Figure 1: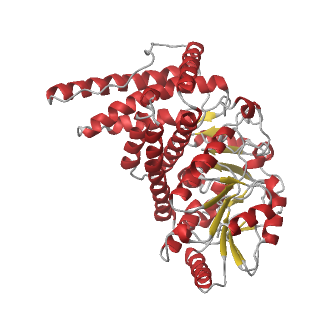
Figure 2: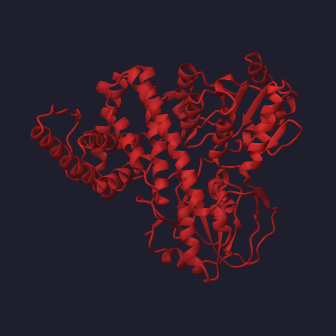
Figure 3: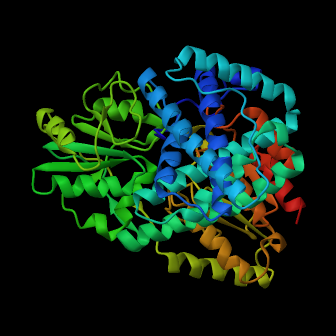
Length: 536
């Protein structure tokens, strides 16, 4: 599960900063090495079979489910680990045997993937960790520092695409093409065959896969739930039994709403991604979707602890929250954390019964509402108005600030940034709630697709690399690297990043982004604005 974003200050680095090799627990990293190596070998043979015209829907589901454990940093029990590894290797043996037979039948050269250790039945986690650590150290010795960072970038892109595939799968969409692109890049991530040139080309190709997949997810949501529009979302609560749905899976929110209809249970959303559900007409049709609860993912520990009902966690980043709320946390994910009840997607009754037995809200509390969402045509009209002024020389530079709300530690930075932007420049703000003659705030929150729609509109005038434009990424998330590289690939010259917590992005990776792709980091508002204008 890509559970709630880390509550730590985004600039509060840990031992990963000095060691330069970890973003999660080293023991879990070693375990993931074992699983990932097996998945890369399976990907190699599945992709070869695809080239020979052989496809298998069952293996596709199995592969994505197994990879999702790495994406979500799942903490495996011995049984879960054995089940995962046994399933992967059963499929691997069948795929490899079928590939060999087809090569012999058609007199083709057989290509093999170098396996670094053999699978053992009932391999215990401690032994697997030792094997993973040994492979990890061998890989690090083999790679140059630049190659290691390129490999890590490829892995982060794999994770972003896997997340989008899972989202699309939940929505019932077809993900055949991105799935095979995923197999292709994984099959080439064997360090014995790894080169800088290969990695850079694969990264460039795979960025396009992520972009197309992200668009597909967005338009599938619109098809299922209706066009996004601006609405006022209630942050108040009312007396009664309640369920909170946190994370990003809109389909699961819909299933909860359908299951609880007419049962006297109120439903609240939680987190930036789920907040956007209120902008879709399909969800506004449910009268018991009362509003949004809490102050956001950065404070999920407090939000979860103070919510007096059951909570469905639908895809967020693993946190040690189960101890605070044991017995009232639920998920449909393949591997549930300790203390979290695993649900079937066809049976939400345990969630409902937990809600009915909880105390619920006794009085309710009034809080100010928040306007969320946008009307795409209004945004594009404003974009074209700005572009007209730019062509007339009235606007010198365009700033796009956001993609996400800024992290709390950047409030001072952006308060000053917006005050210092020259009057002959224009800002599209997707983070700071500030408007003015040369500032246009869009309440998009977690809606990535809008900024790409803006750039698509701009490209109708001329290539993006010909615009005097800078993009400031104000907060890190699980798709930060994919979005940074995609923006660069689209031709945007000036991209500035905030500092990311090591749990999301290894600090050494940021240095590679600066060197390899010309990405910059925030310094101070005066210097950053001065630098962007000097490059015009």
